[in-house]
Length: 407
Ligand code: HEM
Image (cartoon, rainbow, N blue to C red; front, side, top):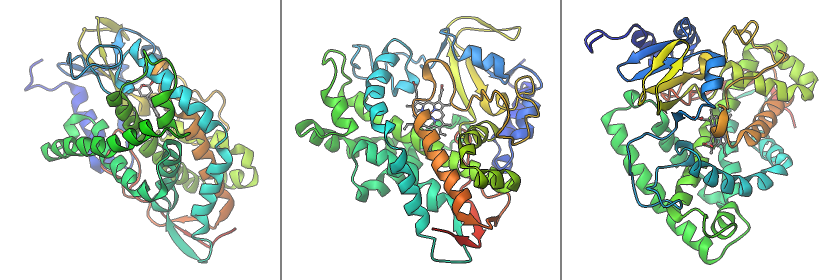
């Protein structure tokens, strides 16, 4: 086929990317999932089935690196710096991830009560007005993850708005490049430079006077021979901010939207707070905060009967896989009690979401509190307006009217 004759999947994928369809991409995922693999253009393929994506996320012939060759000054492995560890292959990926995990896990383990207290404080601000209305995004979904990440990194509360603003702007970098304008690409470059300028003095302060925070731990602990360098550290902090922020915002907002559209489930959660983990897993499956991810083949790879040549981009449609009827009974039903909910919202393989445990804690705390404390909640706009981001998809606002926010 020539470039004047686009591949058939290109039109359906175009509809998926179209902002007009952002509020409900699932009919378009279903359309794309009619075939297990489809060619999108000369160099890209779409894969949509649960079993194929699960296997391919674990296949070392699929790389997370862009393959563009040397990119920058040396990383701590002596090879040219290749970006955040989300975009680095093993073995260096594992070295960077393990160091970060070593600092991250012990700090989040005891954080449940702190997160519940943050949620309670945010909802308390609305407890006086009855009846009233609030926007779940600004009231809870945005401030909670940014507050949590700032606490983990030891960032003072007054600097949270700076983090918040960086998170919103840097996240756009994850979207398919075809959805970005030239101006947005230029703005992203400026934002990345500003982010490094903001972080470098903070890193220097921690290097001089280490504290008990995660940044100080990464700077001072472990084997100095393999310890990440300053550029890798700044990039890792950016990764934690981007990967951990907007995703969790979307989990809380998409989860609240699903609950308000399914009042029977909301009632069940209110009556039984132990249902919260299952509600969060189902929200992650039903309306995943990360809708797709991609890899590059480093060899010819046979996928669902097609040979995908080395050097191709393979896009995994997580939003389609999570509704694959071969894996999930009645996939379009929001059903927390469903058995065997092995969704792909957190990916899989070596890049399986680093912050899944934290995201679950935040999601469970937020959705439980909404169920327990908002009486008579009603959506004021359905569907709500959506942000432009395709990859990290979620409502721009979610306005809800209520009879009361109880204490
Ligand atoms: C509901 C919330 C979240 C969702 C849906 C989510 C989803 C994902 C997905 C799908 C991946 C794999 C991407 C790929 O393989 O290409 C990933 C990786 C990652 N996530 Fe999350 N994430 C969430 C929350 C968080 C949080 C709270 C953090 C950290 C504070 C975080 C940090 C990361 C990091 C660092 C990676 C890269 C892991 C690696 O390359 O080894 N995420 N996430």
